[in-house]
Length: 345
Image 1 (tube, one colour):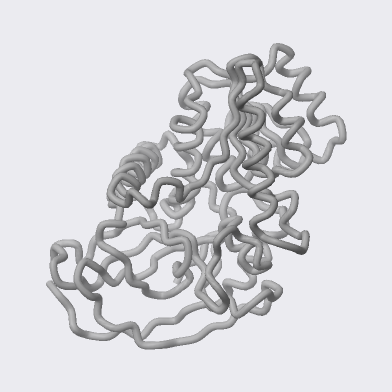
Image 2 (image 1 turned 60 degrees about the horizontal axis):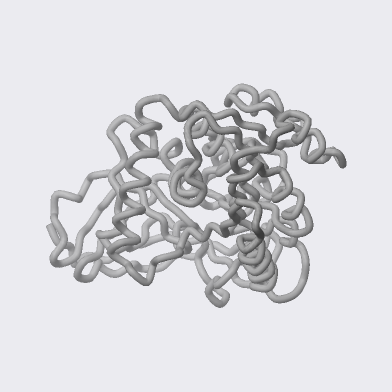
């Protein structure tokens, strides 16, 4: 059924370059959804690395301040606009939003909704929305890693990293995962071989574990270490860079670190050594919107089904109410957690 009733919503606003404690909470009326759109009641959202960069003004192509952060969301449809199937009301969906998820309700295009399997709790589903799609697409679309391969996952305790480890292990791959020592037990439980990321000899230690080189490295750190990740590859291997965490605290142009990494990877692809280098961008291809949506729906459906079947275990680091989003952001930035910090109503 269509709705013409406005909804009162609570939103968390990022007003500018502030500390995590500087987030603001506001309430406003959300009008009825327009044609092709739905109102989604937020059941769970979360803190991604993107929000950590956004509060510093460092996320590539982020909107101008102020805005409501929230990269992805799991929620229940409460109202639909014209030309939207009324049977969606009352059903739970996941969506990647880029911004806007840190709100008690929000509006989305119905075409962006991906069904969440029955019986999967919202907080658990939330941990594998953007993280799961990112991990899946890097493994199977960017690197195209074959079964039985050996890979390296930097930040194997993180939201993307922990999901990537599980997907790779499910496919029979050997995984070497970097993390701080406090997370080594978690990394082992996920099925990876842990290596201390703070060890100055980290890359030498990885080479000792895989003396013939590895089939793929997934690097969210970027910066100077990207060259060391490249050196880990065997002939035919692929480096996938998907972040610039090494420069997140540096002042300056937010796009420059990304552009530097992109240029370096492009140059390496021309070297005659049989290796490949890719920069993974979740939003690549959105200009062909229908194709982008089809691919996202296909990949996220696969990941959610693996979660429902117990192949993936949700890594929920902590849950915070929406009003405490600042504390959730601070915890995620503390580098002390394994998995994803989730925000609930």
